[in-house]
Length: 211
Image 1 (cartoon, rainbow, N blue to C red):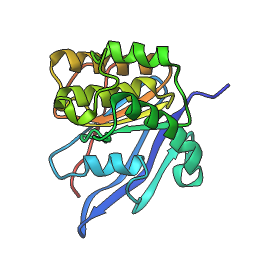
Image 2: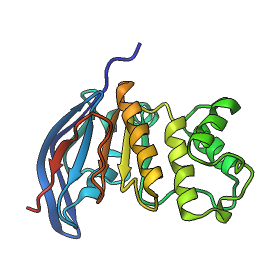
Image 3: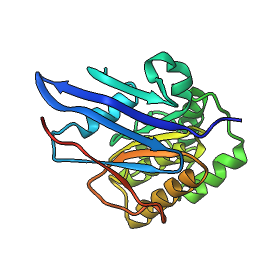
Image 4: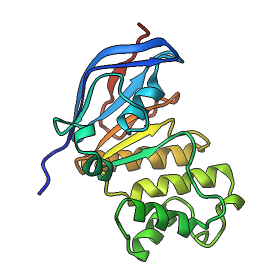
């Protein structure tokens, strides 16, 4: 049985283009909670999320998953991580079904067809499994991307502007999905221009400031 997960930042810093964006950031996030990363444009919110995902190098300090630096457990950490950026990251030449199956395989899982169908129905994609992604609207593409979250067993969700290109019902669907993830012992880190409540779980705030 897995222990309750935690994510920590220790003296974390970021330099971009020769400019210090932030430094000496210390924080700890426990299971069942979510972190809202805030700050002015250009202060490094997306850079921090990319560092958490291993998509950008850590210039100073450390990021720890379950009190172990992420660079010391790359494969195990990757299995526990699901990232959704402001871009959907979908293969336009593949169908909806193929995109979901491909992403699940990358995460080392093979969801049952009934599970995939239930998720697609929840996100308003019923009957679109064989449709090429390139033929979907932007809102529908976003719902396909969000369906990958619902199928993922990852305990840490990192979400960069997750509500982009979504209507009101889609925003609420995602908020409910995150709330369910937290109730099951997961964690979420997100940045967004839209302040959306996540169930009854209050946001923990990390305000980044330029140094």
